[in-house]
Length: 160
Image 1 (cartoon, rainbow, N blue to C red):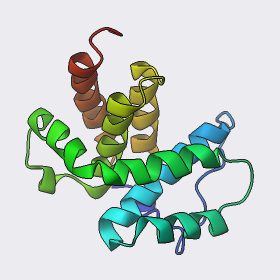
Image 2: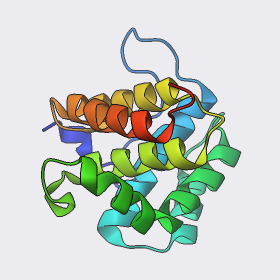
Image 3: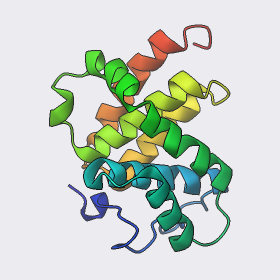
């Protein structure tokens, strides 16, 4: 497992900027990383959403799509039970056995597939796979890709 799988803003250096010779992240991609980190923190620490939002707002500087972050993070938390119910039939194990990063990525991806129909399903899957590569276990991105691809085929039938 990668060492940067624990993305708590109060204990880590921000992982929002580009890494190595890769392309620069867009404001939306930075916000997506923040959403994932906030979901992870909420899942493990159980802190109230508004406290996590305030902590992230005070911690991260620069150009970030704050509107996206403040919309998607609390909505994903609010729909967590619905998202878990949609994810569970697609899994090859109990949802509680998932790595916390993988669960956060799957909740995030499932939320976008179900509730952010303006985001193409291919973008949702690609962005979640990239997040899993940065924050997840070595081959976790493959698992994320398979689950979200199957979800997209049943949720976004008209788009596919």
